[in-house]
Length: 210
Image (cartoon, rainbow, N blue to C red; front, side):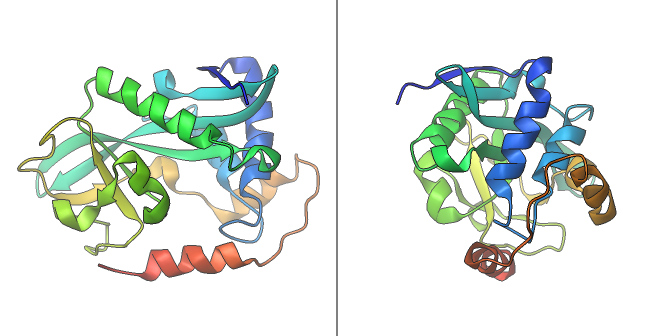
């Protein structure tokens, strides 16, 4: 499958929100809130516009990735890092390497832009293929001071995090209010909310500590 990547344009925004909603509907919770997240991210000061990319197949937008600046906080010291997500691919185009293409492309750009590292919450079995490691190896915790299995770290150059430890803070941009999601979702075509097996996996990873 031939996939072309380019920066997201302003005219793509609603299309990307719709595909993000479709990509995550009922995956992590009944319904989804990732389409609201991406809607809000674009106006946040942490948003990294140069790492906002869409994937196209035959001229159709089928995927997207977005990044934001985040921090590792060690007492009074703060270190700027990157976080990404959502990474969205239309359901009918998933498992065909599109997400990997978006991730690999933007990882390389992140290196060229001089960032130290990328930290995300995700499935370690998936993200280890990109070089991510569990945060415990770097002594970096979540806000509760724990090492969830889902917290993953990728150094963008050798020893980039040498001497850096602390608490990962992805910032207020990733804080989503359920009432706000309900209101925003009414502007989209109705979809049924369901409980699924993937939600159980998400809960398991979020509650598993290393």
